[in-house]
Length: 417
Image 1 (cartoon, helix red, strand yellow):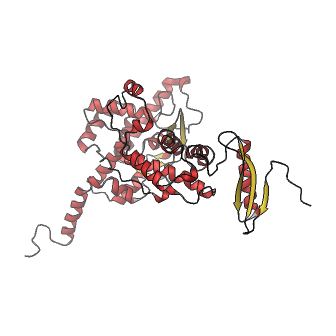
Image 2: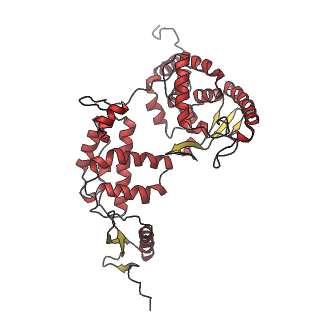
Image 3: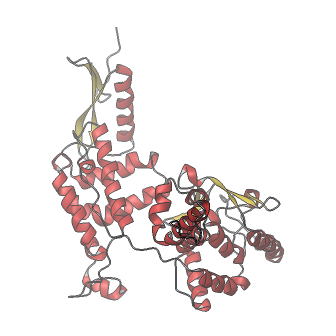
């Protein structure tokens, strides 16, 4: 005879429709307990779900219920589900968007009462709203920080197209898990299309501005980094995650296989953004020369620092771009460095990421095929490349049309003659 389960261990039974169900007491977000059911096609499947549910209860993680406020469900999803499925940087972004924008607007709605209209109206208001107003920043703090809406005046900081997409992605991902757990019948965020937002036109540096910037940066201790960013289009985290083992100066190639990001107060090394981001990039001769000079300078810095050369415990050995004491470089510090360089070079102030756009624009102007640029930048699809840099492609398209004339033997000759 099978041993009877003790009180609180949960029960598994077979339903009339042939499926199995299990029930156990779990914690609600308010700390009280309730009985929750899980379902599956086999007893083993239900048993696994029951064990997972009970493990979360032992850890004090509240279980989701269909009638819980959506804000509480987001808390549950971000704490119990998302960490196992999202990169640390993505999870950090999702937590921020949820805390600042989604919970204030939709947090009090019941999970099973959330409708497509709720999501649609929220996204429309978010797209057209001021970011600081949406966060509920009070006027006194806004005036103090000079970031937002003083009394009677709005700073008009609208969300970017990317931010609107991210907010919608958070809603879709969270509600899809609720569908998997059979808390709701459909994902209402999937039904709603992301509202169209006017994309800000990318304004990369032109060739003359790049020459001025690099000329000014020649005496900078990270000169090789600026040359790499402009010449190869690496992302900020990718260039800071490079080690000397990733670079072959003899063949002029480097391998992108990790990145560095600041998550809250910690510098973390991880895998690149997508599988296509793991790539091999060919280096122009100027990059090779700059890296050789940088390695010699780094060796000198290590000797001068002596015992003060103390890399972080978790950083990979042989990092190319470090501080003067061998520690990984904080990605945020590059923004400050570039701002000073732009001012000194008397060129437009740009972000570090704009140097990636600059690289793509320069390659397009030289007639390099868009697919080659996609591989160089590590874009996941060629659509990303074409959509992002369509504004700088007329020159390349004109050149292609002229080459077609040459191929057909027209050149400057009137084809009707």
